[in-house]
Length: 313
Image (cartoon, rainbow, N blue to C red; front, top):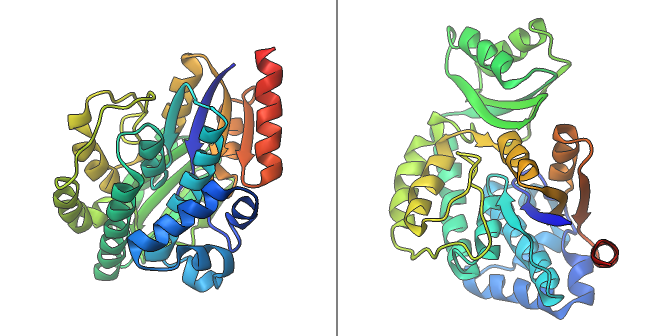
């Protein structure tokens, strides 16, 4: 069975994530220690103990999720597991890039620290937020954005599934998006607990500086096929990553397109490598017949290995 490893983004964090894995697997503990040494902070403590208010700060959340996701992936790699394709949602792209050997964990931590600080700074300059609109497709939400734009800035930020689209915009404009979304037939419009209008033009100052940061790194060609957020398609040229990761800060995450592309290419098993389980739900809402599994605990690792053994017999 062809398998995809998919890596979660910001919003999947919770206090205690990664702890159970680190108690069983030395490679997970080593990954946390590596992150501590590279960042000069106790990422382990932030993940294990929080408090939640500290963990949800962008500058902590992004590095913490990246570390847990890479630790989880390294456990699977120790068992010889290699997927047919990888992708990550927003921040999760960086864990996917590590898994495909496009960049090192050290470089990913460096960029993600910079990215988080830059995004937090851009959010402070212009107050914004995000709203998940449930029950409308991307075309319908685009019409909502067009109507809302008469009052201020808003744009599509994530196309997560056929009936879940997230918009970003100015904080005082988003209530209009909620109103117009409900009028258009949305089942619910949920303000997200984020500190800014991520994946929108309001993040342009962050994207400009991040482009320079990315220019200091060396990217390799993917060892495992990799699908990018902003295109929903494969990237094989190492020279493209700087532009794509820059564009991702202000552009929409094409997650539904990513999952559908994988399915067309024969992927039938989607394994969420990291905390939260959010992506597993999005896959099932996009491709109900897909097989999904989230890996957050030693028991999940065992379940995955047993499943893989059964499908290979």
